[in-house]
Length: 251
Image (tube, rainbow, N blue to C red):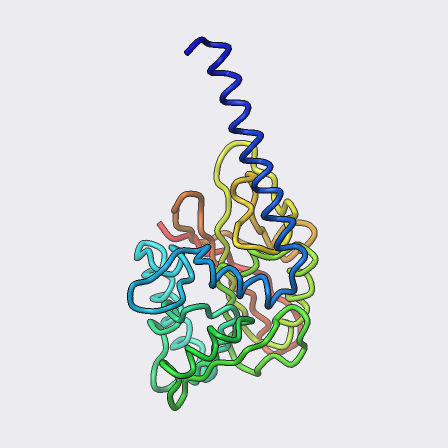
């Protein structure tokens, strides 16, 4: 193949890939939140599992990311006298099942009715329950001491994230985790429509400390996995005043 033919082929592939991404983004943008994420699970957009009908993707499976996170959550629960945990965007419960304990009441929340029905039937127990709620528009979120939002905001638009953050003010502690781009040309918080993808292909990610979210943050711990996964802890201490976000760096 000549140099000119190779270059033409490369350009065609790039244009085709961009067109397909645009088509997919336009499709999900037209759907309601429940319809969009139900479609993601129905089409196995995040992968599939041999032993269960729902899969929340690599972010819920890879030990190098999940292991340190669950250990940190268990320590946080023990160290802060947490009695009730609300897990927003609980997904397939692969992560939540690893840090729950008999002394803590766990409430898993997701917007996909079939997923929540399955979780409740197979994992529901005394102290473990699942509820179908749209965390963006529903201001009736379950009460709790600690709210977890793990790799959820990255699939939402900036406007949806802002609405969700306002709803989280009711919680004393909020721990959020995001998978972000780590490389040259980083542009924080580039907007995207709701959907299965993240901002990483656009050299971006959700950085809660930056505009338009503007939550003060201190980077403490992070794990590298085709980008970087940072965990942020927003603490209220029950006095109504924000004391910042600690982004947790896991090495």
